[in-house]
Length: 360
Ligand SMILES: [Zn+2]
Image (tube, rainbow, N blue to C red; front, side, top):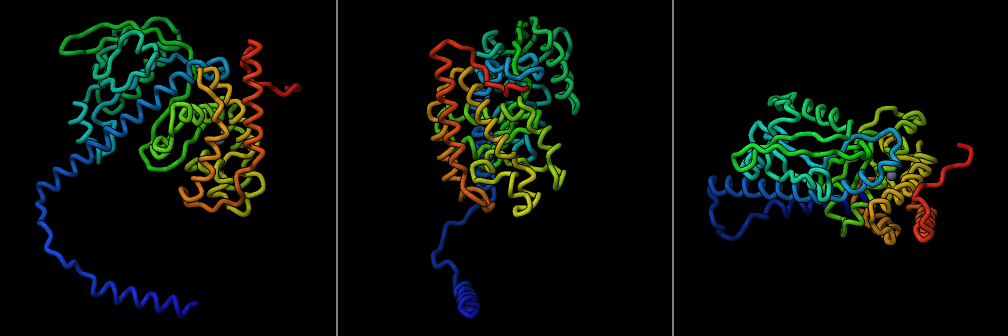
């Protein structure tokens, strides 16, 4: 075995030694290469923004319709998102500036369909000027301050005057935020098939967006993550954790669909991986409550189990971790019976509220 491996190594060195190109290829100028780099960066930025809008259109419906399942974790929701030149990573900053005309001011680049902002006629490319007369600052702390103001006014759920600059003229637009689950949904640019919830936010990766075949599939994953946050799984997980204690990258979807769970596999997988995954019970609860979120937002849940099956099959090669056992069949059976439970309630016109344990 070792000998054949050694031979293979030697052979590959020999091959590498004589492997030079045989043809006379066109020469490439630096200027043209730089142009090409810019083109590609512009495409990356555009692709990111398109995915971002797709994600927010779905998430907007779910956080709004699910407000009563989020307990005290609710806040005023507007449905628009804004960027300035510093919002993008250094590599993409120039491309973003050019593509979307960004400077130090905040520009609305995303308005979720049917959201309060959309209904009030806030538009993409509007530059934000002031909120209830408060002039929006620029600089490093500006984004934080702006978000704080929006949250503060949003909590009263009364009309907020937003002044924007559109086509060179200022316009005052009155937006009335609605009560919604107060968890922000982010798109991470990495090409990873994963999504996670950390108790405060929901993060969906671009690789995951590429995998989705429909809005229902986006809704399924967002609802699952929202359920983790609404049911406070992160708090509970940190209390339950016996190994590690430092939580880096959360793996949720990638872990759940490749059969990793924290129940019996702590010691075998080590804290690095297992400590960042939710337990089987929490996964099942996120599936269960998630389907309620999805239904309330008006999405069809019939294909829920089918999507997780597709993830499970696909994830075995997509992630670089060993799966200790296949995703449990119980998960799919439980999902199918939740779908039945919800449809039954819909037919009878009963409220779409998850069943709680009797002794709670
Ligand atoms: Zn999960």
